[in-house]
Length: 355
Image (cartoon, rainbow, N blue to C red; front, side):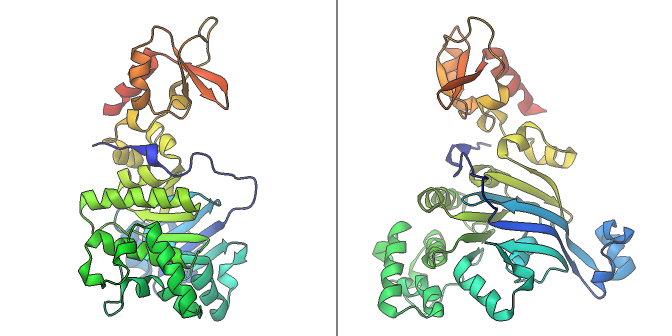
């Protein structure tokens, strides 16, 4: 299995200001009297025991995280882990049972119906697995639909839709209908529709799960490109670890409604939190994810005259340079050498791939 994280959108996330999204102790328990379970020892019961005892299902359990402006935050887990429920609670498509949620400084839990509608129309856009395109409308009208709902004049919304179609490479398809497009092209229309309203937050709920592998990779590339060009903050839900590693600045792995590890792709592969996470990453080539920063050491006297590479270079991409030099490679950040990497470090990193 090949995983190339070189296309990950954001190398450095600015955390000097306030997070754009903040989730604090979010719970979602389906069933009667769900609120009575929270705060009791029964809240930690396995799902089958909780259902048997209370008739409840805990989909999300005490989840907290922050997402920063411009970040691609990936939530990953198997079916039933709670990831899709979690992303839907962020804009209250599913009402959380307890906890706090803020988006762009607004207390989402406290919003009225009208205010919540404005949040969904102007601040956030959601892309689902099923494209949800209107079959009787042209592509350009589908893209402009969100602006139409906002009450934007027709000429203005069509001009914006045409601009976004160019952004996703579908300008030649503006007057076609959805059933004339391939699955990948239809998903691009869905992306364009979400981008057309110029939201601050993009929410993706397993949008590429139904696509063929090659088309899926093309769409991942498209998301990477759009994030770089637009700087949008994204929360991306997936059950596919290679997809998470390609897209995410940080990845939260969920199990039974809880986050079991929240880390960068490099931290996830280099230092899995437990056996569950270890099982997820065991088939991922470490050399494709780990960078020189992960394997470098402090230089010894006389070791600063070797070739230089950015500290963010993956081990895979650095191997040829390291193998071809008698001197350790100098890892550079902001014009300064911050460590050195020799052949032994590379071999140790690669040796861990079978752990």
